[in-house]
Length: 139
Image (cartoon, rainbow, N blue to C red; front, side):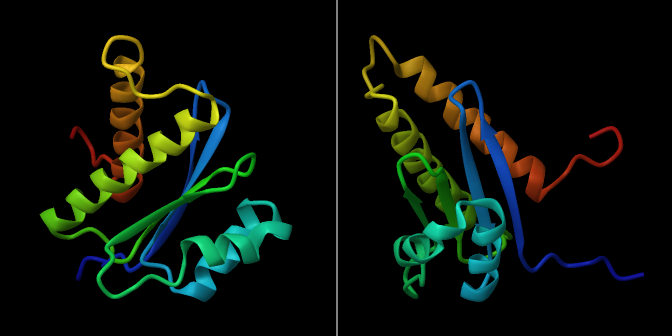
């Protein structure tokens, strides 16, 4: 039997303990993204979200945006199948953490906040990968 090939996915990640949510959109066309945003975010902000996060230019692998008080959206153009996609995820996750910590006034500082930044970057990567490639059996 042929293995099902994923074409798009959407999911929410709770950014605990910071009381924020991240909406992740992977390979969704603009209509599907709009539908997802209207289900998971404040519907009155969907047009603003669409202006911020889409449509994506042909040279962009990903995009991240934030509306204060309304979460963060990370959008990837393609379903990850290549190491180039992992680099795009890393780039966008940095922006997620940047937006999140800016909203709570925790700038990056090697002596004060570096560990919080590093932890959140790792946590968000782990959550994204768990949703893209769920563990199978004893993996």
